[in-house]
Image (cartoon, rainbow, N blue to C red; front, side):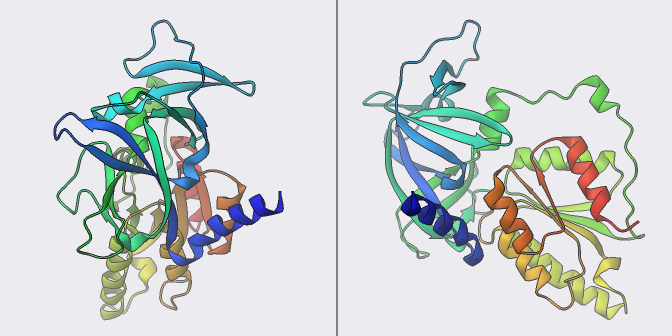
Length: 319
């Protein structure tokens, strides 16, 4: 038990150095290129990896649903990940990845699991900024650790996958729910960063409903660079950064610089340390919430419930 706990602690502590671990797996032959590619998911999202158990089909299930499994008393939906991304397994669906994501538990069927690799977030490039964007791929990981390495893995956008398979439908009551306008200084914005286009669209919709001006970025590094520009502008105008930015809203998992590092950088910077930071993440669990407090974030909200996001932003902003 001690060795297991040590492994968990060590993996969690990677967040202190802008590092993470990526589970690598294969889904079969790509329908477009006819070859087997590596895919990845952050280990923090993986609850367990098991040999494919017996699956019970569900009548009227979605196109990519294989059915459900009973795993130690918990009934979990199983999704056909190769079919979702357009691959054809050569040896069958042999492994099941049980994931915890955005307050839900689900399993993904894959062909094989290759390895777990430890990477720095600067080895991961946004799929959008690299010109290789696919709707279900959030970033590209360079596994060789250098800019000219050829061993790459596609990091899947689980938010986009789940939205595609089981769309979050906003009820009419929710859409018409009255929002209280956020208390921002005149001219100040919310600076938001998230690498998932699905998450960005949901965040934008809620910020618009809250009548909050914002800038939306795709990585922690983009947010950090933008803060440097705005800080200099504030100085030139004889103002505080709080006159330019009311709050930073950041995801945790992002290419180049993760949300932990972004938050820590802000809180250790003399010009930025008073800037409120809210972490908005699909990574759940007490370990992550402990680290959120450890890096000095002012708030944490799990994805994605609009009411919770609005309440957290309102609570953190000065009144």
